[in-house]
Image 1 (cartoon, rainbow, N blue to C red):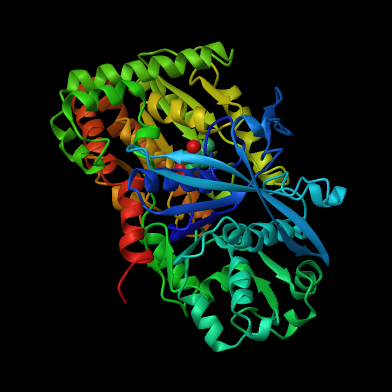
Image 2 (image 1 turned 120 degrees about the vertical axis):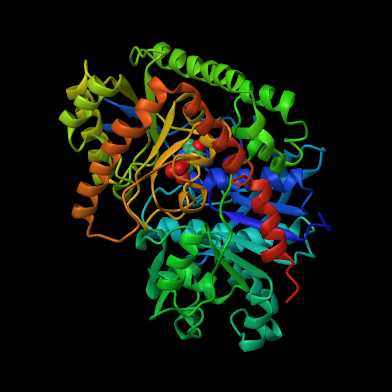
Length: 564
Ligand SMILES: *Cc1c(COP(=O)(O)O)cnc(C)c1O
C-alpha cells in the first residue's frame, strides 16, 4: 500500500448490488469513481464504513406507505478482514476499529482497494459495536460518532496499512472532514494532540480536496460545540481557531472548505450556486459522471462493441455513435424495454404494453425533486394520453426513514397513480437500488427529472439513461444545463428564471404537459425515426461525456495533481 497517493473518503459507496453500503446518488458516484480510477490506474485507496445493517430495504403497503427493514448480508462473502486494528476516541472511550478489504479491479486488472471500517468487535461496548451498523441512522450523536470513525479512524487505519505517502485526501462530501483533525494531530507540536497553529493548518490544507454535493442546508452536518467536545473528547475544542469552528459550532462542510486546497461542486451550475452560498471560498466545478460499462445494458454493450470499437477503453469514442444504424438502436432498446416490462410483470406489479410510450422516474423521495409534478393535473395527463397516444409510468425511490414528508410524497404518487388507472397505468416499484436503477434507466422510453432549480447539484440517473439511448425530459438544473440541447439530446421543462416554489410548480407542470403532448409523443408515435435520432444523440453527446472516466481524469488534472 506504500505506493498509494490518493485516499478517497466517502460515508457511502455502492460496490455491488448485494452490498447495502450505499443509499443513493452519493454512494453510486463513489463506487463509479473508484471503478473508473481502477480502469485508469490511478493509485487510489478508498475508505468508507461497513454498514452491517445497511441503509434499509423498502416495503410499500397498498396505500403506498413506506416501512423499512434492516438488510442482512454476509460480510465475509464479499470482504476480507484485515489484521490491523486502530482506536478512535469516542466520548472518552478508545473504540477499536478494524477494516475489511474489497477489491475493485479495473479493465486492465489494476486494483483499487476499498477499506470498510467496522467497530463490531468484542473489545468494544455493546453500544460501540453498533456504531458502524446503519447508514444515516440514529440521532446526531450517532452521526458524529460515525463521522469520527470514518475520518479519524480512516486516516489511522491507512497508516496502519502502510499508506505513508498519501499526497491527497479527497473528501466526498463533508461527512469525511474529521480526517483533517487526524492529519492535524499527526503534525501537532511536541506530541500535544490539539496544539497546532497556522503552519500545521497550512500543511494539512495542502493535502486535502473537498467535493460538496448539495446546496440544501440539511446536507451540511453541523453540531453544537458541546456535543463535539463530548463525542470527540477534547475540552480544547472550544478554543479551536475559527477555521475549525464556525460561529462556535462544528460544521463539517465549513471544516472541509477551510482545510482544502481545492474545492469543487458537481456541475457547472452547482459550482455557481456553491460560490454564492460559500462566497468567501474559491469553488470550482467538476461535473459528475457514471461508470459507462456498469450502466450500459447488455444489448447496448453489444451494439457498441460492433460499431464503436474501443468505447470501453476510451468512453470518448462514443462520440461516433452518431453513425449507429437506427434500426439496430431501436432493436437494442426494445430488448431493454422487454426486459424491464418482464421484470415489472413478474413483480406482479402491473401489466404494461411494449408498444406504449413509457416514462421513468426514480429518485430519492425528497420534496425538491418534485416526484408528484407529473400528477399536478391528472385530467390534463389523461387527455394527453387519449389525444397524443398511450402513456404508461414507472416510478421508484426511497424516503429517508425519518422523513415524514418524503413518505407522504410517495403515498401521494401511489394514490395519484390509482386515480389514473385505466387511462394512464402507473406502477411504483419497491426498493430502488442499483439493480433496479440499471433496469429502469435502460428500459423506459423517456427519463423524467423535475427538480426545482437550483437545488439539484448534478443528478446522475439521466446520464445512465443517456448511455442506453434514453433521452431526458428535465428542468434546467444540475448536469442537464450542460447535457441539454433542445430536441437533439432530449427536452427541457420550464424556463431558466427563478420563481417562487408554487408559481414555479404551476408553470413547470404546464411546460411538462406541453412538451409531452406537442413534441415528444408525436415524435414517438408518428416520426419514430426522428425519435431514434434523439436517442442516438443522447448516446453520442452525453454518453461520451458524462461518464466517470472523463470525471476522474478531471480530478487528476485539476484537483489531485495540478501544478500550482
Ligand atoms: C444513480 C442512482 C441514484 C442517483 O440518481 P439521481 O438522478 O442523482 O437522483 C440514486 N439511487 C440509485 C440506486 C442510483 O442508482
